[in-house]
Image: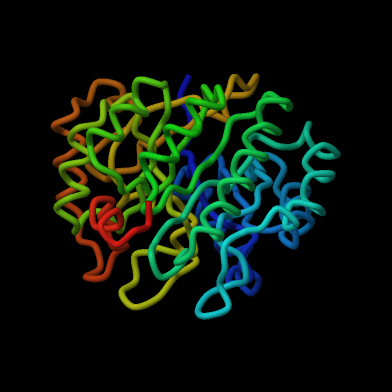
Length: 305
């Protein structure tokens, strides 16, 4: 039985999709995308995401979580604080049967985003609390780990987390392999393909631990901006192929299928080698601007850790 494609990390409840959501969903279906693993960043998104799941029950797989950065973009952005969980936690318990993961949660120690030790401590408190809830609810976690790859993985291992997907991962290959040992999965958006450091990272991770994401509406295919078409898992332009379970679901729609490349077919997806996957990653034309790979060692020298 063939399985459809899965976008393992997207923000389908983002305001950017309000005007043309039906068009985005239709193009996703036409491209063969079967499931959108939809994450949230703050409690204000929870109700919108549940409404979308009701509207598209066979496509939208919801995750609730509080992102390590709060307050939007720009100078207003700050580290998450324990009180940001006050309204979120009751909803996690209330809707536990509808959720496929806790996310987007994690750590972001980028120097200009978390410049103080207090901010980083607050992020850690929020992260650990949500990891505890995920264990209690028997849910996997969908994780953000910018400029904090090593400490994120170490924290999850110390907290006994066995099922995790680290989205848009940008740590060192050696750090990623520690996550591989713990059984974690790693997902990558199309924008990684122009970054040579990320190229080395992707080569180092075993294929069975790699998944695809769009992070839509961020990191899209259009230079200089975002595009709703990214929510279609960029089928026809996205890299790699595999089936990776996020959690033991009874339905095949909840499996992470990342066979989205024009050079691959669904029938041959399981036989592709890691080398072939890398070739597909490098053969697609991506925008000049992509997500910066944050150097963990540089952050250490700047006193982030």
